[in-house]
Length: 335
Image (tube, rainbow, N blue to C red; front, side):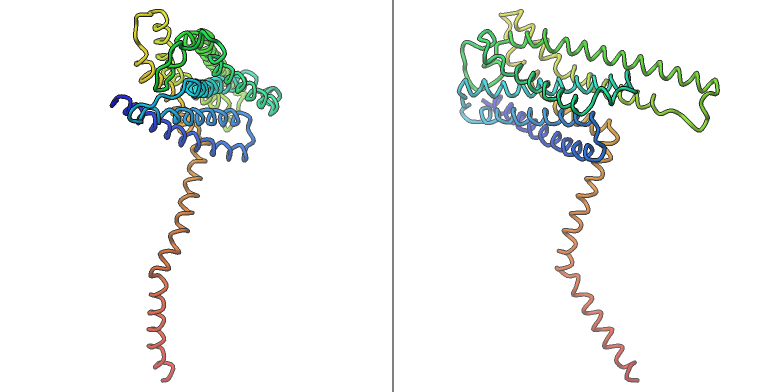
C-alpha cells in the first residue's frame, strides 16, 4: 500500500512538471511562430503539445494509486487511459523523428528546403503523425493477443496490455526509429564536416574576404548538436523499458512487471520532461523569448504592487511636506 501511494505521489509530481514545462514551451513557440513564421517551429510546438498530453494522460492514473484502499478501475476505462498514454507517447517520439528529419533536410537541401517543406507539407506531416499515433495507441483494443486475459487493478500498462505489444512496438517502432536517428545524425555530421572543409579551403585560397565569414557551418553544427541531445535523451529514456519488455516476453518465468511499470515506464515518460528542458537550454531564440516573458511578468507585477504601496502611505507624506513649505513661505511673502 505504501509503495502504491509513493508511486502515485511520484506520478502526480511528474505529471505536474510535464504539463507546466511543456505548456510554457508551447506558449513560447506560438509567440515565436507569430514573429518568425517558421515551419520548424511548428514541429517543436507539436512536440510540446504531445508531451503535454502525456502529462494529462498519466495524471488520470494518480487517483487509482493514492486512494486507500487502492481503487480498481474498470478494465475498459483503464484500457482507454493506457491507449491515450501510448498514443501521446508515440506522437512525441514521431515528432522528435520529424524534427530530426526537418534538420536533416535543411542541411542536405538548403536551397530547396523552403520549397520542399512548405506550410501545407508540414501540416500534412503533423496530421498524418497524429493519425499514426492514435492507431498505434488504440491497436491493442482491437487485437486480442495484445490484451491481458485477466485484469486486476489498480490500472497500469501491463494490467491491460500484454508484453507482446511491447515486443511489437520494439521491433516495428523503437529500434527502426533509433536506427533512423543514427543515420540522420551521422549523415548530417558528415555533410557539415564537408561544408566546413570547403570553407576552410576557400578562406585559405583567399576566395573569401577576411571580414566575411559564412555562418552556415556554425548553424549546421548547432542543429546537429540539438538533434544529438534529442536522440540521446530519447534513447536513454525508452531503451531500458523496451529491452526489459523483450526480456519479459522471452522469459515467461521472469516477473519484471513491477520494474517495468514502477521504474522503467516512468523513465520513458520522463523523456517528456526532458524535451522542453532541452529546447529551453539549447535554443537561443527560446531562451530569449523566455527572458522577454519573464521581463513582462516582472513589469506587470511591479505595476500591480506600486499603486498599492502608494495607497498605503505614499500620498500622505507629500501633503505634510507641502503644508510645511506653505507655512514657512508665508512670512517671506508678507515681509
